[in-house]
Length: 186
Image (cartoon, rainbow, N blue to C red; front, side):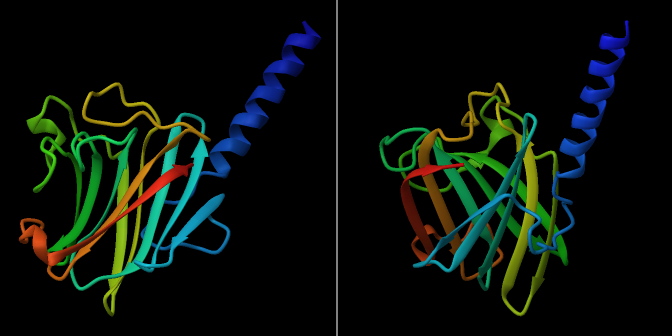
């Protein structure tokens, strides 16, 4: 019985430490808040992340006059077709966080709920000052949805980064900037 109590106590302490290490989704990226980061030199966008249990905490920092976004492709496909994408913009001074899916090889993605999925963003927050974004959000590593890419530590995928000159997510695609990073892993 003492051994069981000891294991139970140890498990509760480990769970408490894991929960304490989860980044705070408040739109402010603090030094050391995330376990890992990746800076994409061409775009100037930095992606931060921590995996806590079955949840991925993500943050983006970058310059943009308009929306900013990130996407994941599990493998090379026909351009962006099949990409799991997240787009962030301000509307009336408030953050709009979209979970989207790329149905066609080019063009704009559609909200997950229009393709049989749902919005898998658990929490989101952002600050936007002087043309600089700090966006934080979380999602499950595996959502069980066909519109979301299953993510796992160490599993390689294609990372998509993008931003636009306007806050309008329907901005003509030719007026946005996009980058692909192959062999990216969380």
